[in-house]
Length: 139
Ligand code: ATP
Image (cartoon, rainbow, N blue to C red; front, side):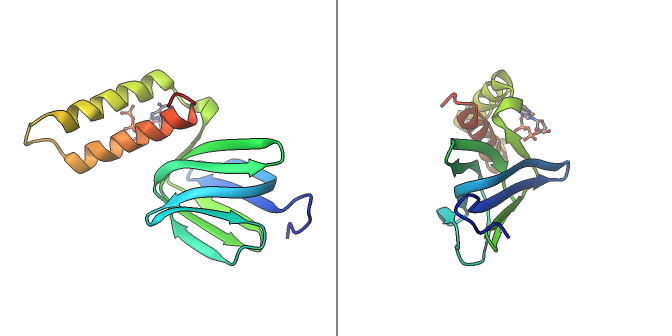
């Protein structure tokens, strides 16, 4: 297991398409669970958490990276952080114009008084769009 000062945490983000992110030497992972934001560092006790649709921040000596993670679970054990999510996106793969259009669509739906609107669905679409825009550096 990665347990040296040089390589404190090993981080993997896995989706049904396979691993989209792997990092050795992370110092801290910050994520948002259903009951709030939390951080894990080296030697954290074993942990499992259900994640919300939000950016996950990975801090290392070289700086901080943000990955858009759309739910799923985070498991921490033996200084390995595994995130298993139905969908996750790197900033470089995010289409900003598409996310902005999705944000507008969702906001317009939520603002409308139309009784046919599925409010929960629109809220989730908005949260996906905001997560993408945040990770793409547009918020
Ligand atoms: P849209 O309304 O634009 O489709 P959405 O939030 O409903 O957005 P999802 O259901 O989360 O889209 O994703 C469907 C597929 O489209 C996934 O493969 C996802 O990675 C991709 N995708 C959606 N929005 C974007 C985006 N802005 N940039 C890159 N890929 C995206």
